[in-house]
Image 1 (cartoon, rainbow, N blue to C red):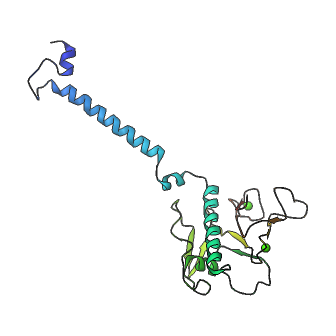
Image 2 (image 1 turned 180 degrees about the horizontal axis):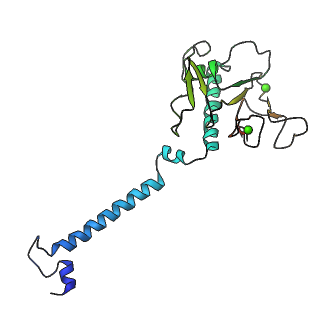
Length: 207
Ligand SMILES: [Ca+2]
Ligand SMILES: [Ca+2]
């Protein structure tokens, strides 16, 4: 019997579980272990779940998604009730506010003052990156960006589908920075520097 036959378990025809089966079984075990390893590596790299994909997106992407969620929630609220979830006299002017307080409670469905049917338009579960973007302290909700700051918002309360562009100043108007944004809701984050006046790193919902 040659060494090759020996290694392949040949030459022991008719006998099972002979000592020569060892190398052949060992070969199969190595093959199976290698195949499992490849599957695990592929699973780690591809991350098919939405959660896995979301983890690898930069903070600005997460901010865009969070702002879109609020815009959609406010849109649904306005369809349901015919107005935004704010109370008080507006005198026909658009309203600027932060992502906190009664507006959030109304969107989350915990304040029946303006959301009389207590519908949940916004889900305050922990953010998909594992960090809490909704915080409840002393009974008041706050929604914060990845840098811990609340968002800035403006609502088209006077219903002309135009909101003054918070980035616009005398002398800096251009195609990219119009005097007004055509939208019913605009939201922005102050960005990593946490300063709303520095627009280089601010994240806007409108562009
Ligand atoms: Ca307006
Ligand atoms: Ca900034």
